[in-house]
Length: 198
Image 1 (cartoon, helix red, strand yellow):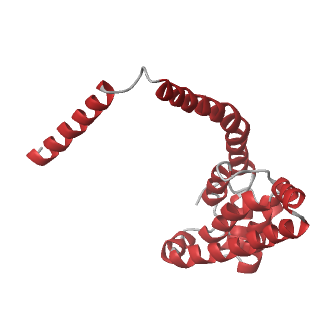
Image 2 (tube, rainbow, N blue to C red; image 1 turned 180 degrees about the vertical axis):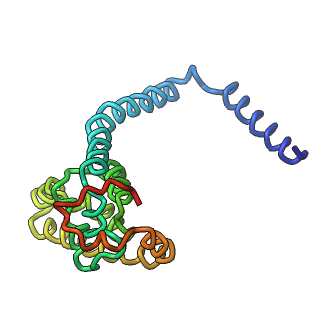
Image 3 (cartoon, rainbow, N blue to C red; image 1 turned 180 degrees about the horizontal axis):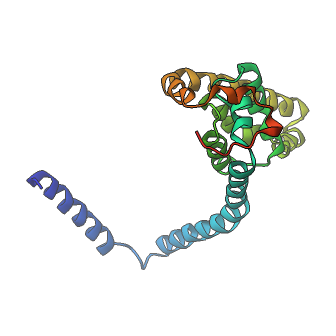
């Protein structure tokens, strides 16, 4: 190691030591902030992780196990028809009541099954915004017009963002598409038993 990295390490250790040494543990304000922070962490772990993230991980696992790669590639793959792929991706989140955190494992599940980066990103963007509960809550609190505008806006912007992602990552998507056997696109989905991740 050179002298510069040693000095950086020494400065970091000194800062940690001084922060711990001068920590105002006797201050009621500091103790209240610390207790509040750990209370929020506890509430997040209890409510959000158990009620949202764990079900999303199970849904992602079910997608990986039960949804055939041929079905995902045919409807959401990089070589699928764009109108079909983006239409399915942008509205399929409406049946799932997912938040912006719990949609990530589901996005990973469909992407590893063969979905293109554009349609998968459209699903990632639109999923939390177009689910039925979010639309009904928006319409109830802010009015029907804003509920409808939210749904339409989320679908439109998800398609635009998905198309931008497919343009930005077109080279990697083309390389990924070359690895997929092209006869998978002509298979009837109900007879396909492919379990390979691409």
